[in-house]
Image (cartoon, rainbow, N blue to C red; front, side, top):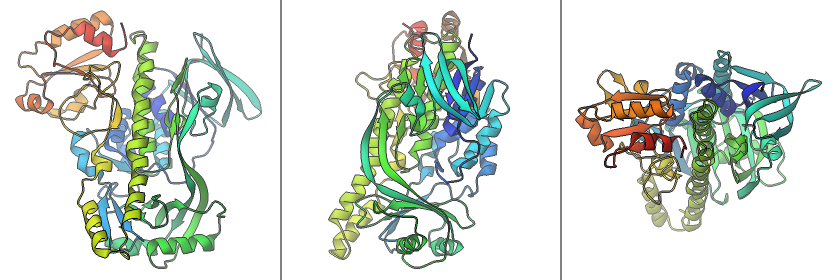
Length: 524
């Protein structure tokens, strides 16, 4: 006997999202959270359309929208400027709307503490989720059947047992340390300041950039690292982070001068928070140690460049949840839980190398090669080329499992975070939407696997349904005998996993549904 099926260490957004996803799949969880109050530092705001799909799956889309302090038309639209915010050199950047057609939800922008508030309220609606606050985990051990988690709460030391334990406890993860999972630093950068302040005067100054929420200053002398400003709301709420000397202190006069330099002219502001952090990209060597897993910042941590942190953590939760449920409910194969690390680990490696580190290198190389004071014509030509280039930070951000051991990907395919958005159905990739005759394809998908049968005679539906019954897998079949959908997807059948990623498409002759389904759940 165990106290709960899954113990989740860390009740931030990733831990709560995981608990909700598991609860919807009938799994009982116990969440141990160290903090008793919500943190009020704005972070984790730049949420993707894929994260919007998670909110839709968890039934919180309306609550998230109601909690959002910035109107939809602002979205996550950004701008890059040279030298300072009021510079004559600027271009649009990070336009998430460019990829909206490929997802079943919209992107959002709100502070992490507001997201967490919504998740806490949603978690409280489930009888199979228990959240304990004020818990400091101090011990962890496991055998072949269970995990013991020891923690302090108040003046008492307590212990619970679970079938599995998941560490969602941040970059300084106690779970990772107690489980003996090693971590490597992929990139060490400078000391950074994080400023939170209010200024309606700055809001007025930036009216020249209508509809923008994020501002990235390409600043000479910063070695390619960002001077990044973001809106918290439309009532003068702002945050900003940028490199500072190692001996910088929380001196308001010093940072007022730095903000005036960033803007390009003085303006009135009132600081609410001055803090510091070290810019570092770290990555756990594995996301699993026996019955213990890690997710979110416990598995991978990096600077707040592009909003990849919380989005990547939520995707960890969605990937792991259905696999844990399948294993606990007896229909997951022996290799299914190992596929969590096999799929998610290369995704963050790609996020780190192909996006975050590339952004730093790109800015550094541009600033080393071009300056308006040195050769204005050459600078402006290079700047205009950047302004007219595709917004690859958005259009090419496509986490996928093309090399997954449980997907029927192309031979030699490698999983990662970089790709090209398209409607073509590709194993290991996210399912893009297509119109349904009487509604939304998302609503037609089942909570388990879904076979989208695009044939005119529905010739694959019955064989797959019979095979699913034999294997013990929940499968819904969706009939979509539409020529336009077949052309868009490039196939006449798609097997969709519970996390809306594609396990298989009908590119094989005489497919064996039983073999396909067993492979998709990690069974031999």
